[in-house]
Image (cartoon, rainbow, N blue to C red; front, side):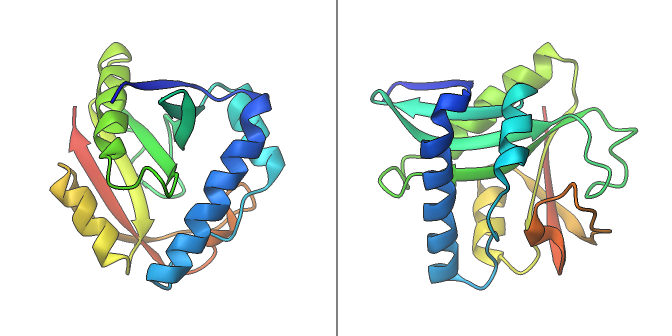
Length: 170
């Protein structure tokens, strides 16, 4: 299967929010950790900053994610560690099981190399053992859990709980 990763455009927003809605429905079905939705202004800002991406297969958007190069509210050492931080991977229910994470990680590895970054980092809900295990089996190391000092700049699902930190060297 041919996979392309491109910057999300504002015209993709309808599909992106559908992917998020489907992901939330799936998260609710398989566990008690789930996203609480996302403000359109947040997604628009990420698109404007060229940090929001779409994964395209067979001519359609099948997944989405965003990145940042600093994540101090979640990763306390992010000011001193050169990393790309991946957030909010959402995959179409029709493309689950097609190992899209591998393509995203490969893309992130190339991005990190091109930008002289040492790690690829992610986080997920601390009690989401199934997803943590999947990320570990995909090459990430679970480095521990953290609480977060929530600010309104973060999506609402960060208000409560602990979060698992995962990283992989580039």
